[in-house]
Length: 205
Image (cartoon, rainbow, N blue to C red; front, side, top):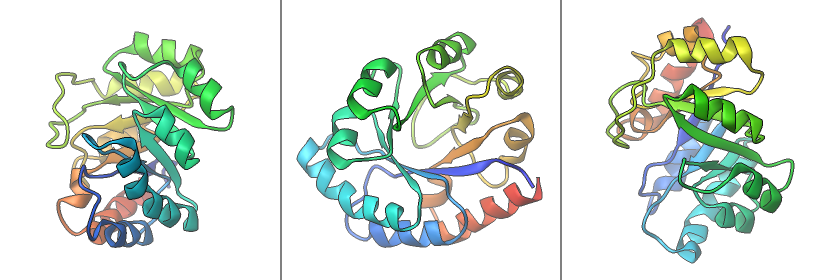
């Protein structure tokens, strides 16, 4: 069985019935982490949207990671923060959130950025987009080999992201991804069925 784990990223709209959908997804199979990713709302509104989702994750022992905002992660008492390349510095985030926080960073297709992130104390690095994604447009297309290279040299886990579905995830797992970050493949259909399918493929590796 593969050591790879599932890392769910929220859709941009987490209002209305989304908390129930999150419960269904987390109950469908093992999920290691959930990233709260909303855009264009102020921090008060973001906190209101996040709180019920945080409670759902806490009840299931799923790490709750906030996208982009160190201050929101601090306010919520989240398990960590995921930073893009323009979202601030790992060491500053560590100062604010403490040594136990999980701090991840997007490294696109860059080995150099990933090594810098490791040196700065990141808890994981994310490579992608491996496949075309409807969730986020990006020009970067890393080769699968970047995952194997990272695994062979570094202890810090790596996350594969971008357009990942049950039908295309196997090569990423084989190449050495510690986590598969998925969004559209789960939320654009039946979330329970999608997570179940991912779990089945990960177990079979």
